[in-house]
Length: 161
Image 1 (cartoon, one colour):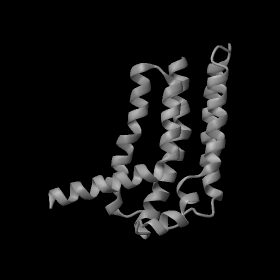
Image 2 (spheres, rainbow, N blue to C red):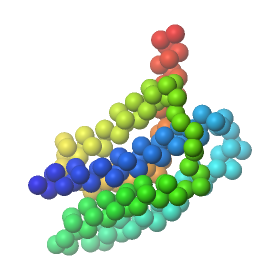
Image 3 (tube, rainbow, N blue to C red):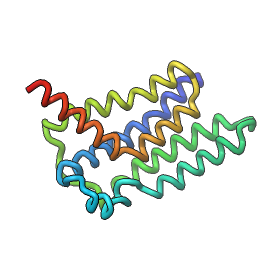
Image 4 (cartoon, rainbow, N blue to C red):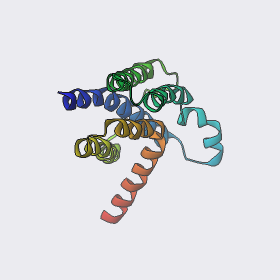
């Protein structure tokens, strides 16, 4: 039962990660990555409000590892942090309105494959806290993951052509 509950907690993270990744794809399609663009958009790339929420999760998982209900606290915190972040995306003024194109589908598929890494890690090791840390890292560095995915996509397309 515990394994099923933990797997259900991945749903809000998947929703949030896909939404920020699609937003990053749209943003990277419109802009060329330069040092000036990075300086101007550092707060759009790395959402520092996420750091506070992640720090709360880390505080409870590190400072109270022997607590009787730490598993419940970690599962609930992870779920509600990601649910909050997902719902908060709709109120974000930096949310892009345009749609992704057919050319972006391979990039989305690469991102989905990368999303399976922490889920597979949990299913093989049963270390949910470490899996949650990895997922929070994915969420925080989503622009970097999308950028790398676009590079991989472009390399694959250039090899095929």
